[in-house]
Image (cartoon, helix red, strand yellow):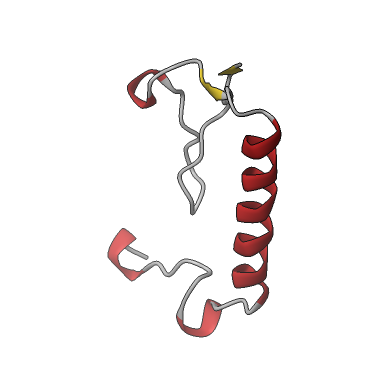
Length: 67
């Protein structure tokens, strides 16, 4: 199957209803973390991050932070 024919788990027959709930949970968790640690910031720029390959979603291998 070509890359153009691939479908991620966010739409079509691969749609997962719980994915919206997990995004809300992640947003709330990050909001609480940033509220409790207001000086929290990334230690590296986005261009310096090592990104995971082979995933449907683009995520960094690690996210070092400073505060």
